Image (tube, rainbow, N blue to C red; front, side, top):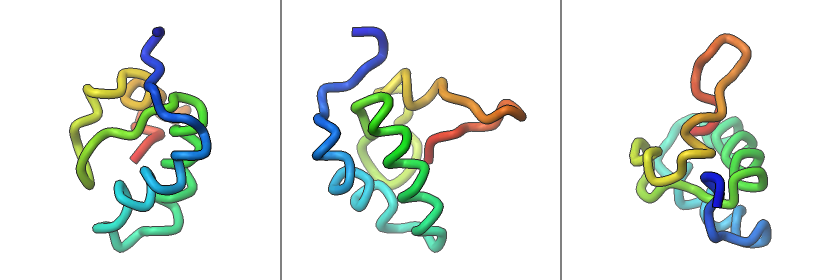
Amino acid sequence: MNGQGNLRASQCPNACTRRCSQTQYRKPCMFYCQKCCNKCLCVPPGYYGNKQVCPCYNNWKTKRGGPKCP
């Protein structure tokens, strides 16, 4: 499956709403979460961490090497 999850793109907004519900940086969290979800079709469970569940989401890095996905 290549690190891809089993979500459909149409499920990303709800998954990201849950993922970003506890952050004070909701807008950027939602933007990057949905970008990552649309590529990876996976959003880790919980509000933070647990990224090992979604290898694609976990391994997508910024140009500087930091995590791209919240």
